[in-house]
Image (cartoon, rainbow, N blue to C red; front, side, top):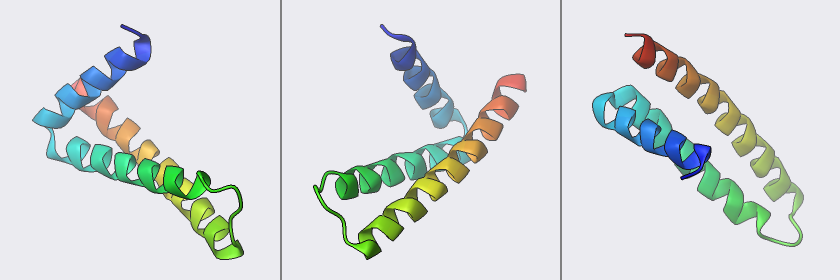
Length: 76
């Protein structure tokens, strides 16, 4: 088991216990899927490039919120 696998298992365990972490984790996964769908294309239109940038920003913003929620959950 890699460190990444362990981290995902721990995150899923915490998500079962905390509704906010679960919500943020689901948002993270959804944004990741949307970004991957867009970036699979060889060429993106300007609108698609803009959408990808916005999604990446939202994913980063959500990741910060998730990290804060995880710190709070672990310290409690």
